[in-house]
Image (cartoon, rainbow, N blue to C red; front, side):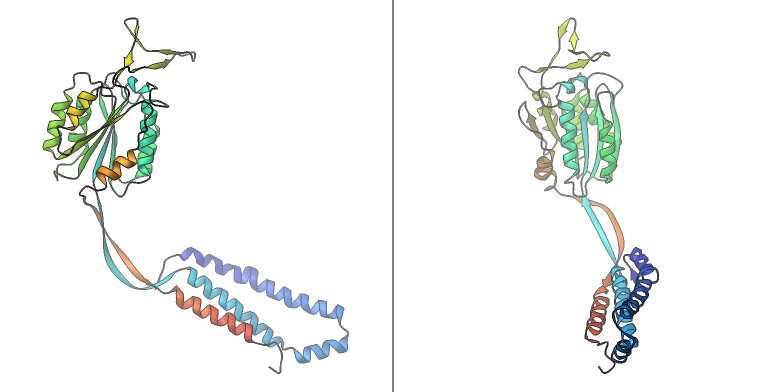
Length: 337
């Protein structure tokens, strides 16, 4: 026999510690009360009609029913059988732009914060896929390798900021190459996706060529462009004394615009690539993107484990406890019954 919840056995300590003393006290209290309410002659008549042994027997029936219910709570199981459990999924690497332009607030609260919120929401609906996170600006860094530990992914995500990379700029090509070479394995040319989240302002990192190389490895890129293509948005910065200003270059304020053309070339260089634009006033729903493009795609076996399956038998003990309770109810305390 195997117990699925052996912690329930701790409840058995309530029998000698609480229930038995409680019954003893009740019997004693009942006797004391009768002495107060009835005369000696009346007590003799009561004791003649009521059987103390039957009272004790009824108490034992209820205590036994309680013990059997506790045994049922331990989930007793028999007949173990080995069962192989397969987990299917895809490998998904999120490339998150952490350059200073992602601080632009044309998408509230900012492009970067909105992206992080969307990734957290995505964590809630993942269905067994392995997730990795790579941050990039002037260089690319693997912040989280492929894993199914979504709690760890959330912890890594909380620490991501524009300080996550040591160099400024936006090197999309380097990020794609980083994912291709350092994140994905080369055992299979299928079941691999990159979700690229950026404003697309690349600084000569040859992203299209990197995407073409990724395509040869069977990787699909889903590009999400953040920001406005036409007017753009200023990049806020906060001085050490807390004063908010905007980034300047050669005395002029920098306006960050979405480079959608570059992103389209990058994603369409891969088979099945998809580009989505998130403009000011629109929402970024990675959950919808995941369900529409990744959940429906083919999956491979990521993990296979062998588990023991048992036949649950707690019902037998509950039925026995019910019989004892009914027996106690039908048993009279009278000596004549």
